[in-house]
Amino acid sequence: MKNKLVKSLRYVILAAVLIFVTIQSYLHAAIGGKDYASIHALCPYGALESLYSLIFNGTFIQKIFSSTFILLGLTLILALIFRRSFCGLICPFGTIQELFGKLGKKLFKKRFELPKKIDNPLRYLKYVVLFVTLYYGWKTAGLWMSPYDPWAAYGHVIEGPVALIEEFPVGSILLLVTIIGSLLYDRFFCKYLCPMGAFYGILSKVSPSKITRDENTCVNCGLCNKNCPANIKVSEMKTIKSAECLNCQSCIFSCPKKNTLKFKFLGKGIAPLTVLVIVVSIFFGGIGITKLTNVYQTTPAPVTSSKTLNPEEIKGYMTIQEVATALKMDIGELYKKLNIPTTVPKETKLKDVKSFVPDFEVETARESLK
Image 1 (tube, rainbow, N blue to C red):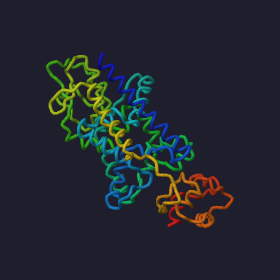
Image 2: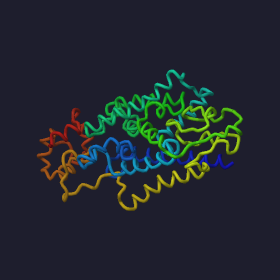
Image 3: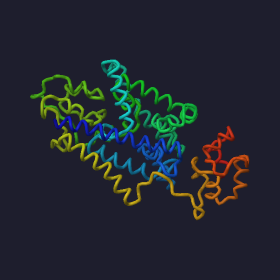
Image 4: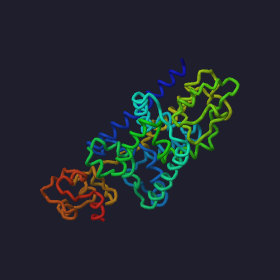
């Protein structure tokens, strides 16, 4: 009974996080970034990409705010203490995969598994993605991965298919591949492509927590294997410390023999409900504390005439007037520098100038203002 409660609570948390992030990112895409967080500001991976720039230049890369680093810090703490618990208990992109996974199970009446000869090598692909994206992210001092990122594409779905494909050409395809893959295979993106999951997996190897199986009480029913989204053969192991384990607790929920499967931290058993409460407390408690202390920032400070911005800090959601104010530049001169006809209203956001000037690009505009 208690396991059913924890399982339900897990779904509630996953759904709540997904709904919140979806609403925020869609409002950001539809209305603008002054009041609503972008998908990048709500994803810890951007902090890894921005780490080099922060250390050596003292600045965040475009679209990254303090929230991203706080989320990274909190998820790192979780990974070190409770392994990949962020992946299994909170991650909204994981939730999307689970939703389509449940739909796929209803459609096909089963879940599929790739042959080991294909599955095992593919699992290393996410580590390649991790190192490649970090290398180019640090080298270019920008969100190099963004056009290839299915999560970023998801956050901009509201903009429509044409804009989506233009801004996220590969990311849009990978989002579709992830959805189709999730219909057939559990946690498709998590297993094969997620760089953040790869990073947490590396950290989880030094975590003092693990799941243990009591061979004396195990009845070898195989339910743990069947319910593991990472397809770990739990029933064949005495200790589960695989980097693939999401710590979703599904194997424990499904086990018919009480205490046969246990989550242990430093050798002491911890009930699934306790694990869930601690994980949620660390993650959301950390966000709450940093919000109260005004450290957690998901949107930029308002543009005022008292502060001059660098061209690199110009955002697509800013209006032409706001850009002129931020740069302390005459608005007529700004129109000339950006090659924008004066018939374009000054209240137009930079990202919307394209509807008046088809070849206008915000990135090009930044360069022309340097």
